[in-house]
Image (tube, rainbow, N blue to C red; front, side, top):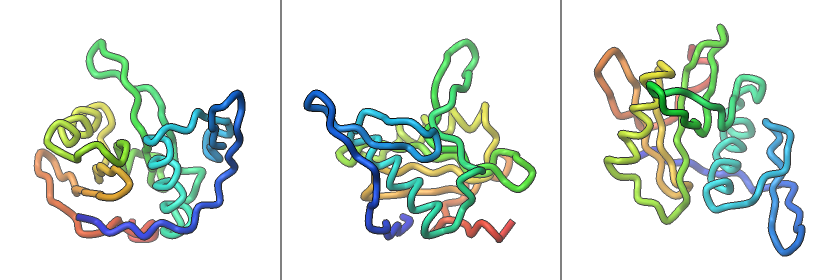
Length: 147
């Protein structure tokens, strides 16, 4: 398991018609604030504020194709050469990070050959270094400068 010490949230949040929205600085748009979106925004904030990953190298909720199926990944971090480097799947806090969640990020990893695969529900985070067909569990998130 990876320990993630989230920074104090400083998000822009607004209320409209009894619904909460959060501003996504990466996508530059207001999004309906679900529990999963809260996890996604906090994890992005951690990557940018704490680990100093460049925001310009992060893509959020973009489409990918698995055969003929159209899906959306949660977070993709690119390396200095703009190649997929780290793929993260976010779930709401009450979602158990079990085998189906791991299988989901592994399926996405077929279309997006990232070196690192992560799953998080905001409370628990697991990560793997993918080399060929081998997965090695990692104890911490890689530093941006390490590549």
